[in-house]
Length: 76
Image (tube, rainbow, N blue to C red; front, side, top):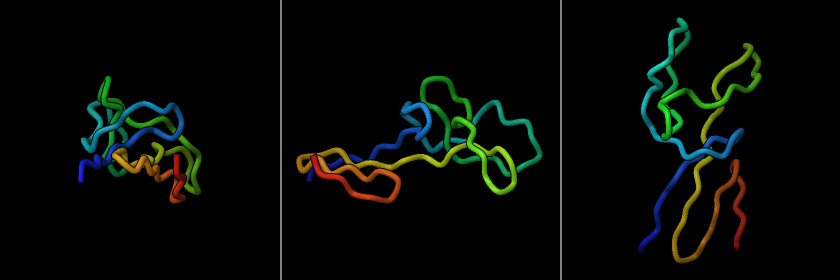
């Protein structure tokens, strides 16, 4: 199987990696994902406790081209 799991920011669509952001200076819990191109936290979204970095969208790229988008599957 040649499938590859990738992740992107749901707000801007940029590729993200599972590394804490290098620019995180707040006392809140440090996020576990960053934009791959510059190492910054994922784009902010409003949650129950105010603004937080978005959660990444995971998607599977491979021979079957099945994408997992915000918990739903879509076939291409």
